[in-house]
Image (cartoon, rainbow, N blue to C red; front, side, top):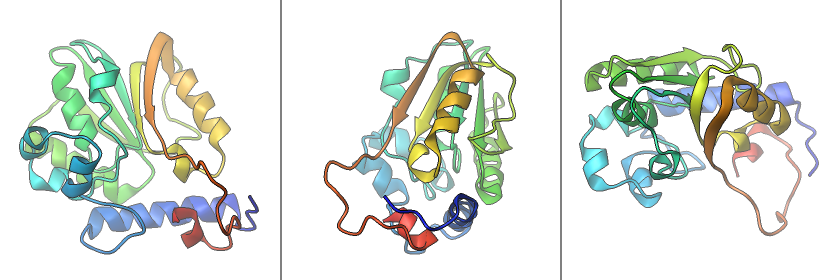
Length: 199
């Protein structure tokens, strides 16, 4: 795949797009957004309706990973690419009592929205930080588990993200990942603009 667009330009373009998803989720995007998408990728209606609508209106995940991660009370979880906080809030309930959830997202508007969502949902064990997946602001061995719901596809360089994910997990920790892959060659494999990154 030819990528004449600089990685830094893609990175900034992704941040801008997801700030817009946070601020104006009703806009048109080149990917699904909202509660209808959450239903399509496997979240039960009872789960979606159990949270304020602001928690799902900016949802952009790829799958319901919660049945696979097997969270237990007292565990610490990283929600990498936490968006507006939907998965993090659900995880916060699952690790209570005694557990914690930390969401990390590069888009400042998403982080602000996620903090608002956590307040509305009254989950005091969930926090959010702004930062990059390629250089996570956490010490090594911080988390028991991680949810990664569609962030690799957004990063121009995947290897540092995988390395950082491994670094911040404790020995024996686990990560559950949902991602998009291609089974056929793209008709136009060149990435000429930031918008092409989302096709």
